[in-house]
Length: 81
Image (spheres, one colour):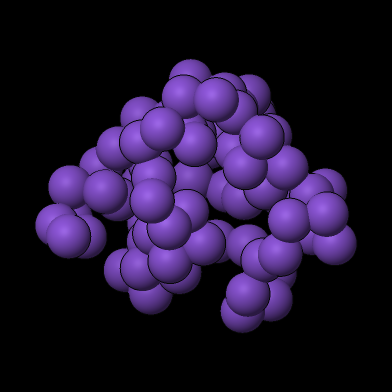
C-alpha cells in the first residue's frame, strides 16, 4: 500500500465532497466521506488513510479514531491544499 498516494487521493476527495470556508480550507464530515461510493471504491482502509494524513498534518479532526455511525458528524479539515 502506497500511503503517500492514498493521502493524495484523500485530499482530492475532500475537495470534491467538502465545502470551502472563508479561510480557504475545505471541510467535510466523516460520514460524508465514509458513505460516498467513490471513496468506498478508492480506499481499502479509509480510517487508516485519515490517521496517516493527520500524522502528516495534512488534515485535522477531533479524536484519534473515527468510527462509522458514532463519528459521522465529525468535521475533517484539509490544512494543505
